[in-house]
Image (cartoon, rainbow, N blue to C red; front, side, top):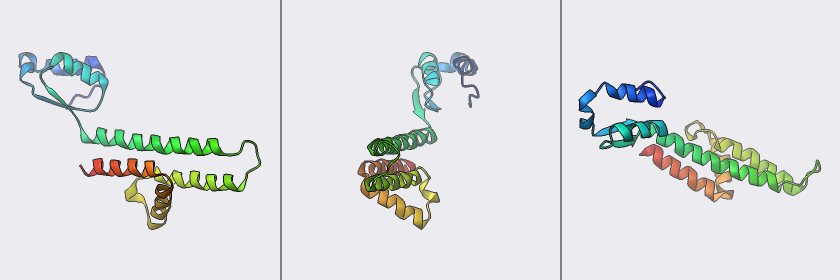
Length: 140
């Protein structure tokens, strides 16, 4: 059954259609909504809750983007305060611009962007590791 509602009441209402057979439900596939988790915990506590792959992968990609954004913030914080930019500031600005490319999906990278991303990964090992983990999840 596909539950169209995103509210606790809607999910509970949909589950009521099972009536006395609720105890027979063994597995529930769902997004990672805390609302659904609470409803299913109450109505079918015996059921194993399984998050669907697309929502897991989306969460992993969001985590990679958080790493990227944190690195950008750190680089921006390192910039000289005021309007005058130093040679070091110029290098940091180039890194910040390159980090922008990592936000795009790998399957859309052309060879030029791929080289830029590799340069970013060489400077930011944590981001490279986060991205590698995301790709492993995608292949799973």
